Picture 1 (cartoon, rainbow, N blue to C red):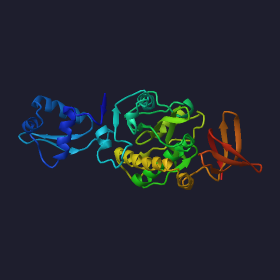
Picture 2 (picture 1 turned 45 degrees about the vertical axis):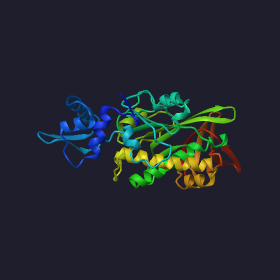
Picture 3 (picture 1 turned 90 degrees about the horizontal axis):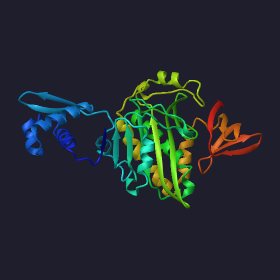
Picture 4 (picture 1 turned 135 degrees about the vertical axis):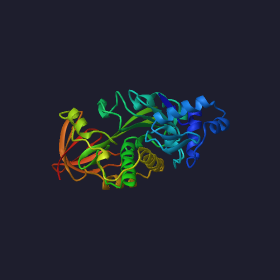
Length: 335
């Protein structure tokens, strides 16, 4: 099942009318007359709307009334009231997909998809960094964002840092929590992984053709169950879920907040305002100032993480020398 934000089907027409008249009951005949849809079709659409997680009360002689919106990340819920110019103004929803990242990569070749969001209730083949599998059950937030940037190719490696910062700020605003950022692009709570990001980039000559940002957030998942499945795997350091937090928010509130912050970061990169991104990321970092062990393609490197460079690379100090790490898995050792 797939829906998009520019769908103008009968179901969307009925839902929109119920949402804009949610203080009153609407008879099937009224809906039929206004929307020019048969009463039988109205009834079928309302059943489907209820299956999508909306609560619609039905009373004989009065009709239908929408009382609760769905918590599903349906495309029209993402775009409604979203305060961005481009990012998130197109949205696609799947109830199940192999990977939102794979789907987004297929769509990214079309420049008209700039800013599009692809979200799925669950993934059967979720992608993590370095080709790892990302466990993506129902209850999490799994989505990808397609971007066609104007910024220079040298900004590409800083973009994941900026995206992680955007998610951290969105979490601060919606859940009133203080997540930490683990280099290169993990978001953590109490030292456990809450969310991860990855970026697939396509280049043409010396120009960025597109960037596809994949985001996985453990929103309302069984952290202990996933920990059992992942225990013993490389770079595992625990799983956190937003369901464990005292303050609550709807999934759509978090996603919308993230898209707003991501667009701000995107504009900053376009204007080469990199120092502010690095400064804000460093304030929230759990990596900087720690002794670390980094697994790279060339082997393990130990040292103290001192800062991130202008391109997002991690700089570590070892025996009086500095080493710059572009990519790798970080294990925190001690303060």
